[in-house]
Length: 151
Image (cartoon, rainbow, N blue to C red; front, side):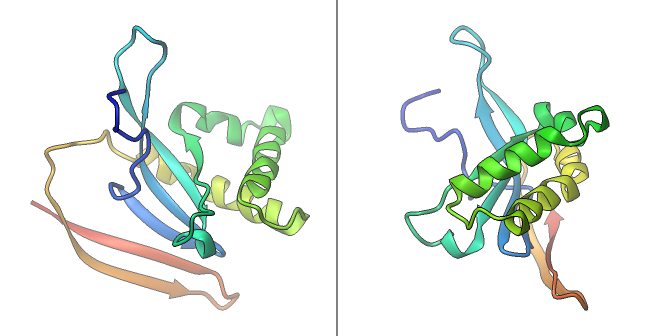
């Protein structure tokens, strides 16, 4: 990776959504298999605690497309999903309780299909945001949606 190039740039994303107390980005992370291999932009989900977004306490937690199958593997009884959710709760400095672990696990599991649908990063594509909406359900859950005009 060239000096100064971040592995993760949250100003470039396919989508951004609000899920309870989380902001979820569908974006790309620069990854490299080993020192000799080429850099690649791999689709990923990035979960951030919404209240930390404008502070220096922001800790982005990443789910890579290449690992997505592990989060929905029925053979493990979703052990990996819950284990990672617990680590994300700790990393985000949230209260270590089952409600927060469930919130993170639900956010990851609910967005796996969105992760799979993230297209390869197109550096040449010119996109303009056409509309943005936030829907609040009867249970108080918030869902943010963005629509783009592709040129």
